[in-house]
Length: 555
Image: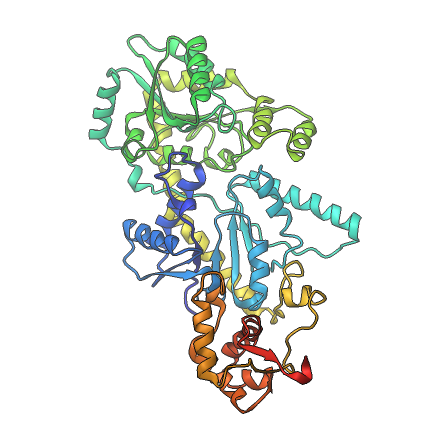
């Protein structure tokens, strides 16, 4: 059996880290593509794309990331071709619409594998709930990036199933598999660069005894991590630093707007005036690659429900930095408390049903919704201060935890390891698919053939027995093709010209009418099946433009 492979559903937005509003899913998407290029072992790299621009972007990005194998882009209209690789990797949880589309060519053709990023938005929640009613199969999967998000997905599916049981008496549910596979990092690329460390520390004015704590990522008090616990705890630890040592906080990130920037500056001034704080733009390639080398420790005190994994702490471990993080979502899977750093306790207030209700009714925006949830999520400031104090005071502890983190990152989160987990998943799903009985294809009941769904609109429908003739003044097939070609050249006459048969197909079929009226079936029989169906439908357009008419006995 050939090794398992996959096609990537690619749109540049999901893999572009050069954008001003850089988010974790963009970095994760680029990282996944890099991992596929370097560690998949594929003999060709294939993407399914909606637009020619995405095809060009995919091919260029794959080459930039070092792809040496052939790189191919398949138009999304040819979804059935995913069966050539056996799996479609989807950069989100939106699997049900693709499963309905897959139905048209047969569900056993290939597997669908999605992934969780944020699960707090309406769109993400609806996509997850739709997994129960869409035609997903046992050979499909939604990858959960952490045990915590797997639990929330299970909870959402259980609630949806309970509703369907109550409303419809439904008893059979077949959700896709929900494996837990983490996001990955390029561990070797994050190794400390001593030259970069010296240059950055000189640029920031860091003394030989000073300690630099790094925070890397979006700087948002409502959508990422509220900085108050960090400022309070690190400010207090800085005040108790050993003689001659100054504590620096490097905020490597980007503000969404001036409101966020002003809030961070006001809190820093009020809460930790003794702390030396530096802001660098974490979106630039120079900073994203080298800033890790300047630091002695890393912190991310995440308190936000929109995040499911937390990539930056894993990058920090790969860079050999001890991590002070919250005991929260995916950080529980990545940071080993007391070994690679410290996880400080968190506390969530309850109930918050009113926040969900206001968000559902659009009284609150998504940003307001997650801000409300974060406002009532507390980070243990005392435990955070203790963690910072320990690391600031003890260079040996920093070194031991940093080295343990580097080893853990290499063993569990390097892309070579993570892609290996995906390869095992693809193989497992392929084995299940290979043993499955054929699943009859069909269309979504919500997306039925308009000729059937709206069959009561027209006076009659064009069918195989419908008899047609050439319109008055058109003597033969050549004249008919000349007229339809001239009319199609007029703007608006054929707005979907891409759906029409070729001139040669028209000429071949219309030649039948030179002997007199004939049924649609006779015209279609002049062409092979795929072209015949396209021709039969287009005959209605020829009636529309008065190249053909219904025969007298059918009028």
